[in-house]
Amino acid sequence: MSTLLLWGTPLLAFLAFSGLSSFWVQVPYDEWRLTQVVILLLLSGYALFSSLPKKSALTPQIHRLLAIGILMIFALIIITVSQAQYPDRAIADAALYTLLLAAIWVQAILMKRAPALAPQIAAVLALLPLLTLVFLPLSILTTIFAHQESVWHQSFSNIRMLDDALLPCLFLLWQRPAWLAKHPAQTLTFNAMLTIALYVISTLYLIAFWMDGARAGLLTIIIGLGLIGLLRRDQWSSLRLPLFTLAVSGLIYALLVQLLPTDFAVSVMRTDSSQRTLLWQKALDLWQAHPVLGVGGDHFALAKPWLLNAHPHNLPLQWISEWGLAGLMTLILLLPIMLRILHHRQTLPAFALAAVAAVGIDAMVSGVLVYPLSQMLGLWSVAWLISLLPDTHLISNTEKKSIASHFQIWQRSFKIITAWAIVAMLVIHGRDLVCVHCVSVDSENAPRFWQFGRALHLEKQHIAPTMPE
Image 1 (tube, rainbow, N blue to C red):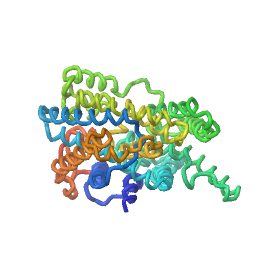
Image 2 (tube, rainbow, N blue to C red):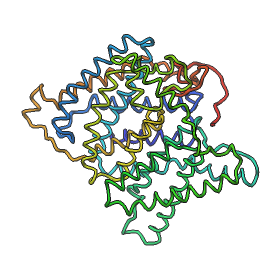
Image 3 (spheres, helix red, strand yellow):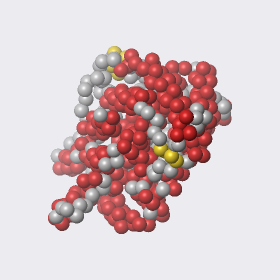
């Protein structure tokens, strides 16, 4: 039954890409956030009551760092919350990212227990964007031949939300996991048709990036493929699919630009930074003014100077500006785990590894780890890689009896902090979970936790649905 928890991310992705709604709340983004919170609460609740694993993929040195660092970070978070201008916002932000980290931990454990299931889920995640992108060619044909522009982004109120969610799915498609791979037991015709279908789907996904003018997404895709070329020379032959479809999609985009109205596609040749430099400067200024405790979680949008965006489009800058030393220490603690993954790069799925690298790079220029769907998809790939790391540290009976074991100290500490995050999330946003047909409301409509990122809670109010850009 516990493996059913691994289907939480595919469920969220299905709801988002299909455009289906339970009419829980009025705006799709808010519904995705509430669905994500429920999934995170279930995964974190499982973490509280599951037994500690006897083996670990991490080294004793990493365990020692985690044992010391987790408690220090939590203490700093409590102090930051106590001095924040809006403590409820800070608590909810800390709870969300704690639950996301707990979800990585739990999913990695469950994937290790059911190793055959993760590739099956990866194949499903790779194809789910088709539920939205099938409308792209239909919209193009309608515009060219019927001269009627139609919406193809479906429920995604902001094109960047779709691009950020599509990024890890594209790399999972190129990985060809489970039943997407060639099978010797199948006929040559079947394998050839499957390969052709994947080329078509990959081209369609990439055209979406081109049409949205997703410069950050295309850049991270190229960097991710470059990393495979540098670090996994045994996988050079597998680069044919992404490189060929990247070139073909670019040529198709160049042709469509000549055929479609100028406002149908966003140019990738823009010279502006979409205000990123202003956002980054604001984040650096906030960190300089509050280097130890930060300005407070989810306070970026409310701090002066006023800028429209509710996050700085750079997760490291977001954490250090809002959480100060706690954010910086969290980033430092994540580095050994990422280096551990990099150390075993030869045995890990190459494109899944590239997906994590691409998401990490994109997180420094976009909101891939801010929006609920892309958060879950990106971190699912991280959990998959961690689950595939070899167990190198066996916990002996002596260590099991010792309360001083670094391995057990950090895991028990993290369980306690996860319990705090569950309670905090329910206290702050419990009322929103049961607020039927509600909506987030502010005057700017810049997404963060909610679609209207400056709002703390959902409210009962009738508004017209937000149309995609």
